[in-house]
Image 1 (spheres, rainbow, N blue to C red):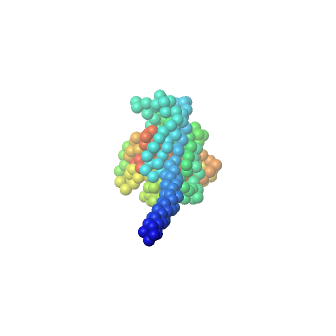
Image 2: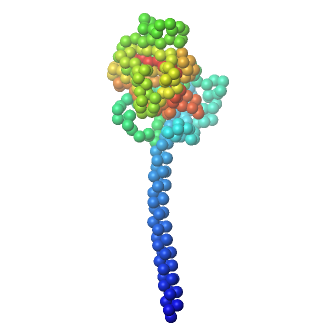
Image 3: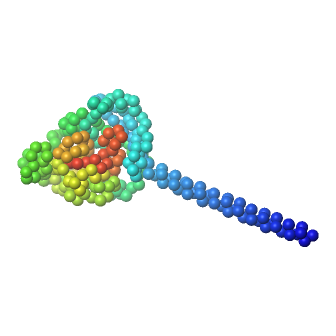
Length: 273
């Protein structure tokens, strides 16, 4: 009898131990699932689908870039890819890009979370001169002349920097969402300025910018891939009816299909008139 009671006691202890282990195991599953959901949400929040509606030589096409906001890596592309390849080839690649449907700068946007979707209207040109002619058409006036400007001593040819007094204010930043201003590039109370070399400290470092002007005026900012206004160029134009624009994240703007304008700028121009 004692042996039977002993065996029953051992079985009871074993059963309790197994039940306890099962209970602990079940209680851990929701916590693991919760961690997985948190990680999934964090991953989703770091991704933005950037849709570019392109216009080039009278033709239109759209491409969606699925972008990792942290690394800037393009995770996927979709849309009119075959059409884009037929219109843009290696031996005829656009040299200038213009954006005119711009977000007006607001301090509240500086702290906003990365959006899940962005739609950007894009015009492509074979040359910067062609882009500037279109800007003058939109502005219904000529881009300000730089004659009589304050030039940098010793500068010659296209490698020249100068500015003229006016009402425009231009700010440039090392990081997205207007973080870490490049104070050496700041230009205030300017009608126009050219900076042929942003300097070794700022070269290929720009990630966001702000261009401000009076409500009734126009503002036009151009970023160049190389120094002395060489290489491909990206232009931002805002007409009367607002106080300028803010470009929160240059990762959203494409230099080539596979590479953004983030950390690519070596020379800049600005106009406010």
